[in-house]
Image (tube, rainbow, N blue to C red; front, side):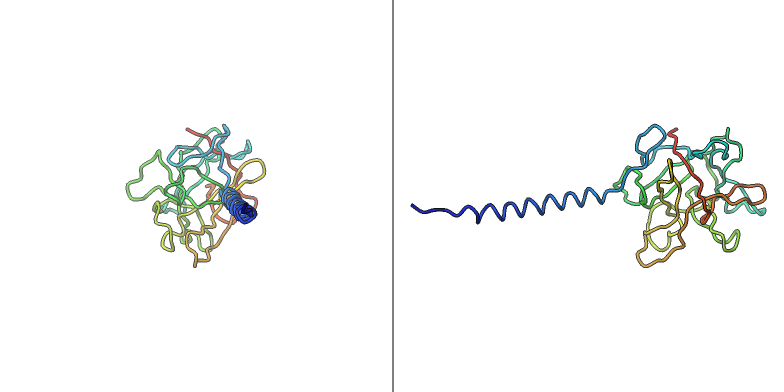
Length: 208
């Protein structure tokens, strides 16, 4: 009677199983945590939200404004009145197949409840209005990740018990953009969003 050495079959099987399990665990760890709105639900692509300060007494929602007698581009600003909820936005993750907004993942942000005839309402970085200041303005384009659209990509990170907006795009592997958290710059009575403020503006997301 021939004796079969089952070790020959069991060891490769266990090895394949172990490698497969490790692969799926690593893939699971690679998936970034979703950003949550104030109701505890994941923030989604194409859904309207208000971005509001997490701390009471720290102003209202976001809108557009002009500074230095310039109407093009308009800057993204925060209303000083906390009773004003501002203009709602939508988020578009860089991966067109991804419908959930996740931490530290590049995305476009655009105002959706306003129409400006000579400008897109997609957020972008502008360094011309105030030299050496990275202001957040509108006038960007949605999609097309790469060097030419580097200024149009933002992301969200956790900050204390809420979130912060960040500019540090990775859509261009050979680019070395200026990175920083987004806070408030006081400019002629306007509260303008810009890159580089410490502490950053602490925000929450409210579904419309």
